[in-house]
Length: 513
Ligand code: FAD
Image (cartoon, rainbow, N blue to C red; front, side, top):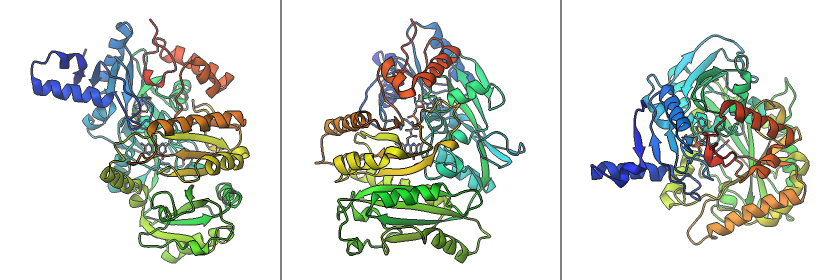
């Protein structure tokens, strides 16, 4: 087998060189867990592929070896062991990205070529293990171009987010990341390397998008690019009423064609208190701005909401014009007057805003502590009830991290992808991004609370789906996808990974004997 580099857990047991053995053991230990820090599944080896052919060799070797599985690992930012392979091979996709020269390539032509709603004539060919941050810096610095659709945090890999969805405040307008791909190079579970797109092997293309790593390893993606904005006008506005918050957020994401619209709409719930993490201080931008609680209406409850919007600005835009456009779009909103904030920031700085959160969390130790996160898509039909029963009912004091809650549109998602979504056209991302602090609740309690939230969603009949689902056993997965989509998922698995070698950490299909 031609593999660029392989760390074998077994090699660590019989070391020829103690230093090397320690390195091998560390590589396997790192691949045994993830950002969630809740799962430990030791692989037999970590493979560092240098090419798609290396990926194919590893998968073919696994196919010849009874019981052996293969997990592509992006940046390991899953929270429930989805990129692990107990006793199997973990493919370190960052190695593939770092070994490719040039790492990214500009591809011209093909106007309108395939990405949902994307009109740019230029594309970036990027390795599956590239970080979105690397795509951003390369695109802006080298060509003045950038993708339209992002995640909030950019130290995630292209292959990792395309295997799930990839959402942020741009999703309502430009579609999620799975709607912003023109072509993929994929190594399927039979060890074949195939190039696919909406017009060439479309079934494989759409299976892989949101496919939880089940159908193939993404070794290259072709991402549509647009002219990169220079700056962003970024604004926040506070609401005491969820009904008013949701009505305004939904109005902003459903502006008809031709109407002025923001490029980014998000929002979060926060505690009506001076708690430095969960309360008022989480809101003001830029640094130094002050939240004046005296402006809140007298009847404000324990939970408040912050709408967050941004408008892209280009070098030739007039300064005043952007400010005026934002002012006009925000004028009809029903937020608490006086509790609005705005900042003018560079485009790259805006997209990199979560890096500051990471730096602070690394400093206080919470980055390396467990992250019992829960991400859900909840239909607009049920979001007010969800807010009442879960946000206000169970999480009113906050979760020591962001509680994102913002709407997006189902019509921006191609139904042929593998992603499972609620029924309604408007649905909310609810992201409970818990950080564990010293002296805070025990991790087990937080995991149990996530379970209680999921049970409440089911018991109350909310139209919802887990985003980054984590289930055990066929019955739970079948319920997640719904009968028709589950049938298609199973058929696609039989077509592209018949031995169920790939992504065993998702715990969907057992490896065929
Ligand atoms: P991994 O966790 O390594 O892998 C995830 C899954 O994809 C695994 O099943 C793995 O086997 C599979 N996989 C990885 N690479 C490939 C590949 N090349 N080919 C095929 N399968 C592959 N998500 C959002 O949508 N929006 C956000 O704003 C957002 N913010 C986040 C912020 C933080 C701080 C963190 C930790 C996560 C965030 N996420 C967000 C979630 C993130 O999208 C997921 O964690 C996702 O799994 C990507 O992470 P990764 O690249 O490290 O992939």
